[in-house]
Image 1 (tube, helix red, strand yellow):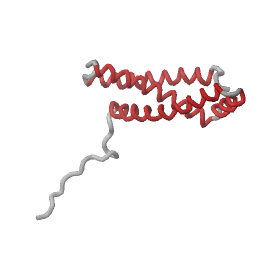
Image 2: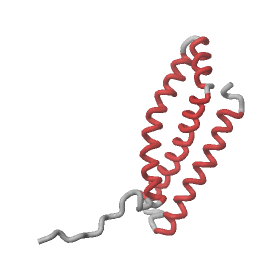
Image 3: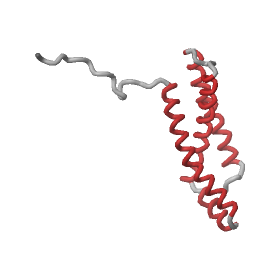
Image 4: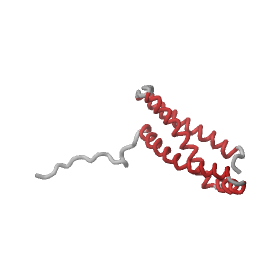
Length: 131
């Protein structure tokens, strides 16, 4: 007997993840990135606790454009991870589980993360904090 030809399930190239699923994946990814960025904060603290030459070497390294991109990524990761974490806390108490509220809070999280990233990046790079 010949095997029946059944339709294949949609693949990732066809299926588009909803925003809530994308934010869930990003929440996990930003958590991993923040864990890695914690090593940079530890190096900064070690340089600050060391001599002035060590600190200025760290500041010079942190002033390069690749380091600034990593810092900007850490700022975005911090903002997005914070707001998605707060939303999960609200979900844990039972608020916002309705479909319409979930759709709204998806965009609230994205917009607040974007605004927070711009504001924190302005303080980090625009105020002369980093030469």
